[in-house]
Image 1 (spheres, rainbow, N blue to C red):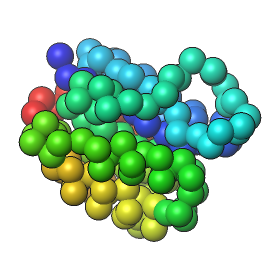
Image 2: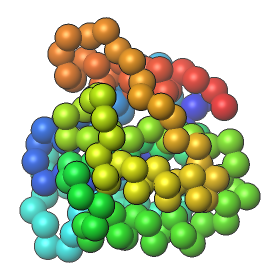
Image 3: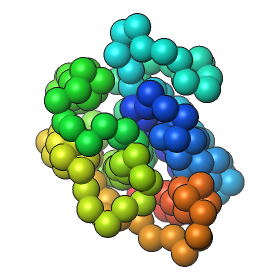
Length: 156
């Protein structure tokens, strides 16, 4: 069974819904998932409160790490915390793992500054960023489910 960790930065339900759609698609392909929200202390809760706090153990567990970024800027407190966790990981433990990032619009043609910085941080610890994942679905939620299915099926 493939393990997919979906980490997302969201202060709106739109980005949360896209992250959840990736998770649903991964589950539909029989992958195990974990959902973790990046948030600043004191930020309001979005749809659900039980996402948990991202820990090194989540990254060690995952075969694929999906990172959803609401903010296009890289210098946010949520991303700084994520990058600190990554810097503490032994890169030899990340060999063979892969990652995919998306912005607030879901599947888009260009990467945001935040996506580029996160992908560089993931690559620095041995996690291979994947190129954009394609989907023919017309609805944004269905496109993200397609991505989740693809990422959940692909064994490393």
